[in-house]
Length: 347
Image 1 (cartoon, helix red, strand yellow):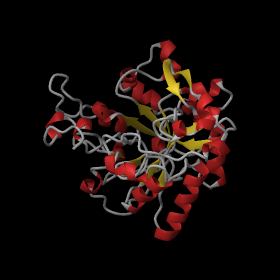
Image 2 (tube, one colour):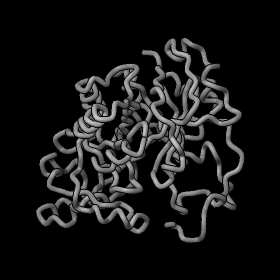
Image 3 (tube, one colour):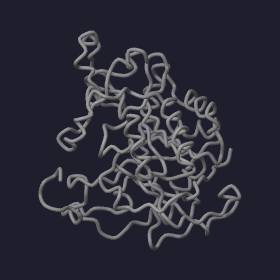
Image 4 (tube, helix red, strand yellow):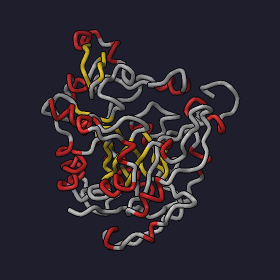
């Protein structure tokens, strides 16, 4: 199956300042980047596209204003004008796909307050790292539904703690149902960018997420080349597998350091994937490139300030890949030093 490109039509002007408190990632065009029009029409599935304005991805929903990965967070993001919402997906013990930042849920739910689940606290090795807590794969969906979400970063976002305990952990199906409802209410096309978390790990448990994700998208009529969907992963093998399972657009995520866990033994790094050769290889199975923002605007290691943009956007566009960067946040601690205001890291 050839790689495909999907770009949703622009529905409304997005003012970047309206989203500065959210964790959002726009598709960007650097001033010196080659326009998408320069790519081969065949490379773009027969569609020559020029993106004049950035699209806004609401990372984990409106996570600056509501606890992340809740239906309330996704709803608010859509109300604020986001083009796509971005649910991270993990699996329950009975194979349900649910939206959580990680499969370890002590930081995002009230599980520690449930004595009936105290004996499920454990230590596991996830992608080579030891993690202690409670894990979604040790709960059925029915059990997980007895928990309530809470703010993951209470010191950073104290106002969000007012919503602790109000919202359930949503399933992917519930997220897509919400999108259907809000599309009907608003008349807008609302994109969904599901991220598959820890694919190799869940495969090792017999809880592969790729097939149920595709099945769920198909039930909602979203398993199509031009669907407003962007299936994301930091790993590579599962995206190559998905390229043969679905016509929906595929996004290769790249972290700011390290490399994809599934290719660790081969010595593959994200830096090596962002060379001209590496980006062309990504274009053979994915439709979008999604690097950490520091690959686009590198920071000076001594001062923490951004300087000149890199050539990554230009290389991606010449390979026929639009670029979606992550994650833009307004709090000082997440920003380059030349964009901070004052000394309070949480301001």
